[in-house]
Picture 1: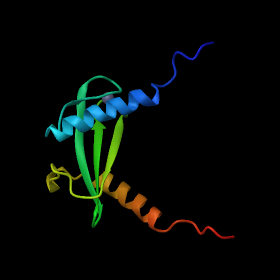
Picture 2: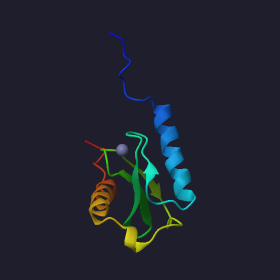
Picture 3: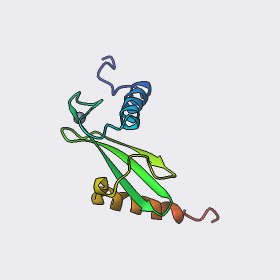
Length: 106
Ligand SMILES: [Zn+2]
């Protein structure tokens, strides 16, 4: 058996991600093309898990696709109305985890 049904390779993912980021930079926050299912069903959500941390999420309404960008400053299109509470809780939990890394010494 060959491996033709493998997941798209990393370059494809990076390209798809970049096209979403470009759309975002152009101010498009809704109905972006999903790199996974091909539908125009990706919406942009923001989170603000800590004082100087922001995340930008791309979430497809049709499939399981999601992708996020970490921002160290307020994204230009950030508005409180587009903050997703559920994603923000998720990011807060991750931020907490990172602040308390496991001890390195035995
Ligand atoms: Zn999709």
